Image (tube, rainbow, N blue to C red; front, side):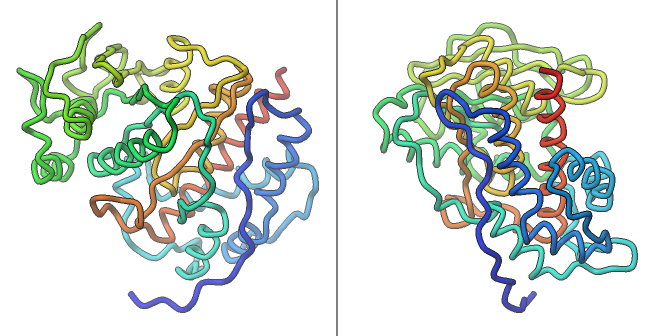
Length: 338
């Protein structure tokens, strides 16, 4: 589909969290700057919401969280199931170029931002099969540029792979990297195979715990650590196994309890660029606030991918801006609870 030129919004910084952390007032100010930015206001107005114009981040968050159900295109499905279609709110069509231009300004498209030269821990957040391949490639680039990043950790959870993902794993040659007796069934199997392929790990890992065999509620409490020299895969349990698989907060919290960072450390977590703003807030909540370590979530975009993945559109971007709103609300609740 040919798009008109996207609106030229000024870039908006994703809230940062340096080594030692920042005062609560500073974090709230940075949240407010993102939430009240020109691209967010433009999308809100295009959705027919109007704008409350408040400088109070709590009031603004309450308003945005109430209204952003209009941008929920998942309907309790995995993110990859969002249809490639126009975003419609009520009888309003959100222009594709507006959504893409806003997402670009909000740090959800381009991964060419600054790297963290002083990083001490590298964590890859697992996801869909092809995304794992791209994130591990990005991780290797980080390691080449930073001699301190000699240890890689990949977090994953009990999730059944879709038929499409199993086909992708086969096309990428990952089946030959499965552990003995395993099939390409869960996200954990795909992650282990992708790590072995990316790093040429022909030897088998040291295993503590067990890999789940499926993604249902009975398996969501499974815990496993698979370790090679220089690489670890962590299968993490869900905090609400009857309702969902382990989410990003569960995974980072589990890693933190096993490997507590210090206030002198800086953790880099790698995801796909569209999820960077949302997962940055989750990482601040799971790692930065409890330990005062530095936190940076870095992304993989289309230009830095080694295998093509889903082309994101307006529905995907609006969904993840909504995720930022909800993560910001949870973060503020934690701050207020003290």
